[in-house]
Length: 509
Image (cartoon, rainbow, N blue to C red; front, side, top):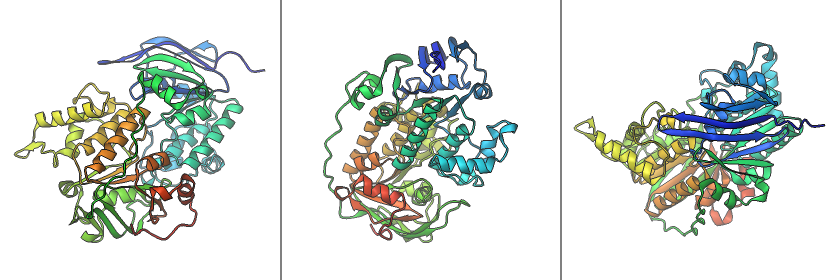
């Protein structure tokens, strides 16, 4: 007989930060054997609440009952001893260590026996393959996500907290993860699941708590609500219908040309690029799908100038051979870039939003005067991004690390689009972003293409690829498949290519 006492019951949870009431008397109840969704737009207070459960954040007020007994969770180690595991959206990994070494850091000494063999077995069983000997700095975002999930599963938790776990997983990987979560729930593990992908919440979760501006606003059974209804509760407004997909006029002159690009990966376990050729016209969006670790990071780095090509003509940006130019020179001729990893790569989290805006925008937005930072223009640039992209922050002087993941993503995408690039290369545009913000980002990318820019989108989210791209290609093993027009592509055909099905040999777009 199942114990009727909830596994976790929180009441009156309150947390203040300077200038922000992150949690305002929040209540949350998670039953045993339940997959419970925690929903809300970016900045709603979800991350603060789950970090409180995991002992990362100390609440100012409120009570937590764990297994029916009052408890004050002192730190993550205490949470783990209680049986609470958490998969963070932003990874807590040491890049210089191997997969096994990172996982070992989260385990007690008694739990480290035969660790490599257990990692291999558990990761294969759950469809999240990992090599225990690989060094983390060589791994893609998707592969790093697998480490976090497997590390928690090795601890046999009673409550597993998952923050955007499928944001960088392919549809097939996500399906396997859902099967795993349902099995875990059936075996006695409760799951608190935070995601902006509302369709998967409807399919997976039996209950949901919805937050807005730090408060509880509703509880419901997700399957009894439509995606639109859930989103409208989250934002307290009617969700605009997606704009009718317009046929974009493409120019006759290519904005981005990649020709016979072959470069080794600078990472020991990375995937080098093999004879890649692609062309994107003015006004066109090309979507590149693929499973993490197949060369997407190397492709983005080669286009942005972080990896130099063998010859200038291997990469041409707006008519200028740029293959051996660095990132600053490529920005000067019209290129802008959004990498997949926002923390540390897209942004310096200890810097303010103004300073982060300056880092990539100073060339195209003339943010210097006589070689010195122009603070007024820099602040105005950051403030314009905050306003246009509805970034929930206290202002241009807010540190990047004070923002939720989704709000930081909105700022970084806005920073690049606001520079009016001729070429935009962007990886995982809406990773960790809520439905309303994702729609706004998609509209901004589409509008940029209408203005005549060439846009390259690299994403594992097929819904996103199909919503934006005029043509779709797949990256596998360092090669890019022959792209197909949107009208000829299906989710099934692209998914098969992502999974390694035979495809046409490479890449003349």
